[in-house]
Length: 209
Image (cartoon, rainbow, N blue to C red):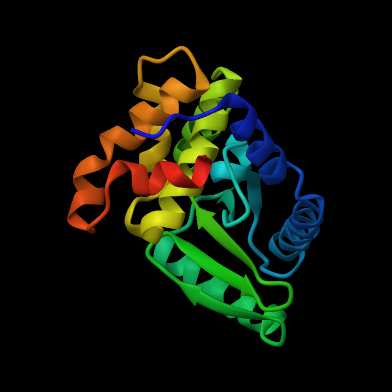
């Protein structure tokens, strides 16, 4: 197994964490989506928040922006998402591609390329998600950094075959006391998937050495 060096890991983490331009671009789009939800949808927005990896501080440069919201009163999810998609098409048709899945409306801006998922939740689901995000903030910093690095190298190796939340769960549940141990444990937990795709553990770890 390749030996990881903390100094090299910290250099890579600084590169991941210091993408100021990308952060500013997403901050701008966050404010734009907030304005859109409150002013252009005619929905009574009760709560709205950043969610996903950006809220948990486990994102890296390919992470999208998840925005969760709920309404008062609660609306049938099919109805509200169809409505949000229609209004998003009206507002962003010249600058973004708009699509819909079972739980979200996706607004993918063209220039710069930024992906936004607008996720509708019930008030109970919203509160639960928001609590989980707060609890995530209590994680040791080395585990958050291990998640970022594991996402980075697994994406380099096998793309989106492993989802970000799966990586988060593995790192959270690993019984490790250091950054290097946590990364190794996480990557080993996905060895079966890597093998099915024709890769070895070292094929992922090499991106950190």
